[in-house]
Length: 580
Image 1 (cartoon, rainbow, N blue to C red):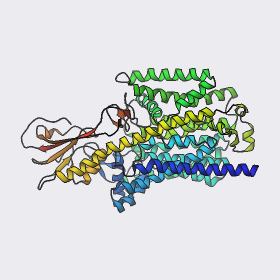
Image 2 (cartoon, helix red, strand yellow):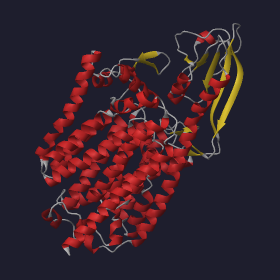
Image 3 (cartoon, rainbow, N blue to C red):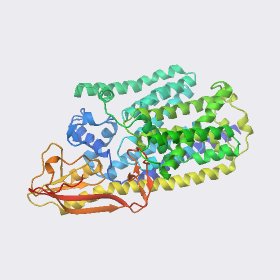
Image 4 (spheres, helix red, strand yellow):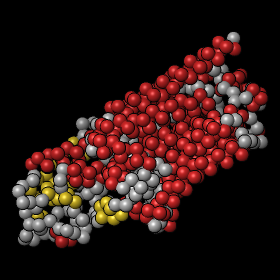
């Protein structure tokens, strides 16, 4: 019997890993040809610099805010992803499919890490893997930016480190620490792994295993030493000591709630579970948390919140409350983390909280990419409270770290009746989330593609002998316009000559046109691209890459305009100045 059960668990575990890999392919493959978008241009600029000077990745300039500035001063993250992509840039240039194929590897790592974490913390349930991998935040983030890679490496670091602590195998703990270091070299925000992993070691009464995190610290230290030797200053120190402004932390907090609700559709299942069990205190606490969050948000909005804002705001507040409050209540009743199950819940809450705190206090503005690290621990914590595996007769108590630890787990869990209907509730939530996820991914693809398409069309139609074509704006447009041979307009010159053409997109990130062009621009062409679906990620009311105010990460809308391009001829005479 023991052998048979062990074999069944082994087979189930393998299936879970395969599901993680297949989900990664399902999310990544449809977007292999996605145009380069938003900060992809910065990542690829660093890759190109690495090909010129491998040990000086930031020793170049980029016009990212009106005038050329050193990449060192403009980028906010280390260059690990740029190093990964550099050989492919050397071989294929700026071709989307090969570079996205390389990034697909990080999605696979995320799928495998989520599968292991689900076995360890959610009784082998497939739901955390499904909800994280099929999140709108993940599907629309299939770019060559650093966010999904950091999310993947962080999840893998936790999985390997936890395995090392549980099994008392120092090579695994060291390997988890090394992965944490790589995550930090992908995005500085992965520094939250230091308190998170040390916290796990302490909860397992293996505090000395936290010393293996010296490997992660060493990798970060080597990167700091490299920038000191090559640039004369430490990049991380520069970022920490340079005032950069940004949104008030309160705005970032409420935007984070909206983003969590829009990226993880687990709140309805948690509400249904609490209602079915008659957990009135939990429901009351959740209602109070939702009300307080809404009152606070309204004080910081520029106007009354829209219906979609309210939906995601309440969903985010409810999800966090329903996932965390039961754990706090259990700890109060038992006087602390007295069992292995309690310690696991505390750890997941610590991981979730650390990710949220950094997303609120450690960034200049809120965006979906800053909230992505919250999704893995929050999904695991939520599914632990739902216990969907009881529907298959496999309660969490069968997942033991050691037999002695399992003895201390709450025996009332075994007495609970299976909730077979919960599988149906979760299935409906997942279906809705997956449909929206691929819709959001398609909407972001369509928006990014406007810049690629117009750059190609303008290269074919606009150039004339002896005349230059200039462009204004950043993001993916900057990369495609530069690749088409157009010259980027800078605030302090050089300026276009009479007879040159200037392309100005409407929605792209840009500054005010230089005053030297006042009255010298005559509109000669205008083209608008429209969305094929009623979803937008970067338009009126939606800012996937910069959630603020009453905006949401994505919006269902009748507005079909994606981008408008205006082409001007530079005149020698003065005339009306167009809006930038």
